Figure 1: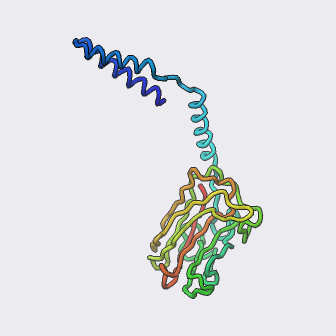
Figure 2: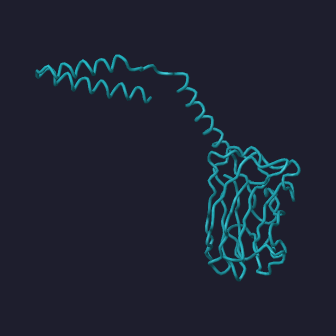
Figure 3: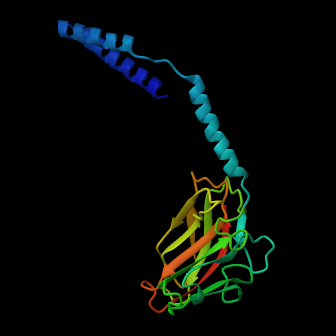
Length: 238
């Protein structure tokens, strides 16, 4: 396509020079000859097979994305559609409490996830976080995970108890080990509001063929000196 554009531009330039030449002057004749030489020496071959391959590849990617069905991590507390388990406690893990069936003002349905991160520094790490894993407690030492190829994003809703809570990172993937995740993506830091707010992690161009760490969050005591209580709901790959 670029070569076709170049051909068009050169033809336009040739016509302009021809017009100048018709008005007289040997310099115009010389310019016309130079333009013709450049035109004659240029390579305007069109690689149909390469262009067809690129177009087919784009169409295949679009088809995979279009065929991807919503893949929930959390829809409701007891939903059979939920995937992954919030089992990967990190940092000051004793400072983290999770209620996966809280009735406190869910975004949709009847329940949401309530997370309380205290400031006790129980393990001395001064930070904490949790991975949703498959299977539970899988840090890459065993097979698990899902093939999420075709997902364009991970969408979730979150709100803070008081507003101003800061979550340093929300992410997917990143688990290493003998059976590592195929990719990683995330956003952050995120400053929470008391109102439910939707966030998205862009997954376009990511290798999602094997993801055992389906979702994770992490924060620390320095940005939450009083601890943090926040809520999550409607977490899903789309």
